[in-house]
Length: 184
Length: 137
Image (cartoon, rainbow over all chains, first blue to last red; front, side, top):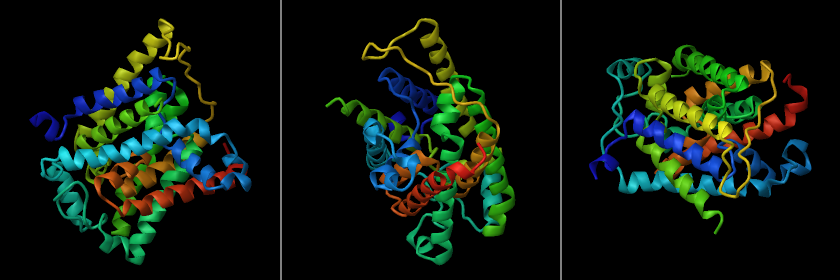
C-alpha cells in the first residue's frame, strides 16, 4: 500500500488526471472546474442583477457534486493517505524562497501564507482575497481555468486554450519573478 | 443516484491533486521557476492521454454512457480575451498557488484559510460578470 501513501510520481498523477477528464467525457460532461464559481454566484442570486449569472444553473448540479467530491478527496488523501513527509521540492526553489523569507517545506503548504496568523493580518487578508480575485476574474475572462483550458481544451488541440495557457505562464512568471519579491 | 458518479470522480480528482502535490504552493513556485519537471510531467502526461482519447472519440464517433455523441465545443476564436484573461489568472495562480480546483481540495485537506481565496475567487467571478460587456473580448 506504500504506493498509495507516498507522493505519486508525475506520470501516475498525470494519468489519473487524464482519467478524470475521460470519465467526465463519457458521462457526457466536460471537465471545467471554474464554471462552479459562476454557478455559485447564480445560486447566491447574482442573476437578478447581472445577466451573466442568469442561466439555468441546475444543469451544473453535476459539477457542484464533483466539487463536493474534490473537497472530500482532499480530506481522504490527508487523513488516510498521508506519509507525513513535507513536499520534496528542488533545492534551488528552497534557496529562492528563503530569499523571500519563506522557509523550506515542513508540510504541504508554507505556514508563512497558509496559517490563520497570516490570514488574520491585514496584509494576509488582502493577499489571499486579492489573489483569489485574480484567479476568479481571470478564469472567467479567459473562459476557463487549468482544467478547462490546459487539460480539456489543449487535449482537443484548441488554439484559444493554447493562447490561454501562454497567458497563464505570462502572469505566473510576472508574479513569481517580479511581484512576489515586492510583496514579501 | 445519477449524481453519485460525479461525487466519486470528484473524490478521485481531490485525491490525485493531493497525492501529486499539485495543490501545493511550493510545487507551483517550483514550476514557475523552471526548477523541476514534476508539474510539467503531470500536465504533459494528462494532455498526451487527453489528445489520444479525444482523437479516438472523434475518429470512431464514440458515444457517452447515455448513448449520445460526445461533443467538443470549439471555443470562439479571439486572442485578447484568452491572453489577457489567462495572464490575470496566472498572476493569481502564482500568488496563491491555487487554481480553482485546488482551492477546494486544499480546503478539504484542512487549510481552512483557503476560504478567503475562495471568497476572492467568487468576488472575481462576480466582478467579471459585472464588467463583461465593457471588457474587450
